[in-house]
Image (tube, rainbow, N blue to C red; front, side):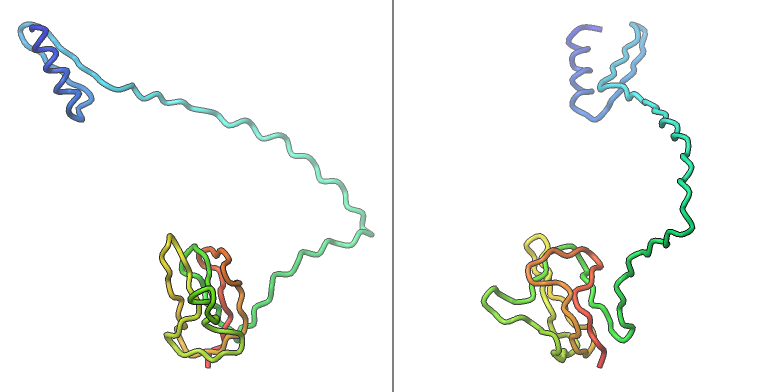
Length: 154
């Protein structure tokens, strides 16, 4: 095989997504391979250190009390954030908030906005309710599934 033919074969392999090319004829064998061979490395995790025995607790020591989780009244429903973003309680900085504590809200009425990636998404009431508590302040970050409001169904 001539050098120009070999160069054209190499160019063909480079111009396509072929990573390996084999050719065999009466003149000989050609094997073209491009890229780096993948190397697999196995790493063994270190052995866990031996467990240390817990120090004995004196019987006269009172047991530690875990902090109590916040109690949510079963009468109230939580309005959750459907996305990660920033909560805005007002349609614009100089406007009044969409709702305040004690307001009666109709189904479909806007409670707040959640801004995500420069898009403002209206969070609407799913049913007629009374706003009991506003959990997130204006212009604060919110995670998916976090409570925005506590409301009471009417």
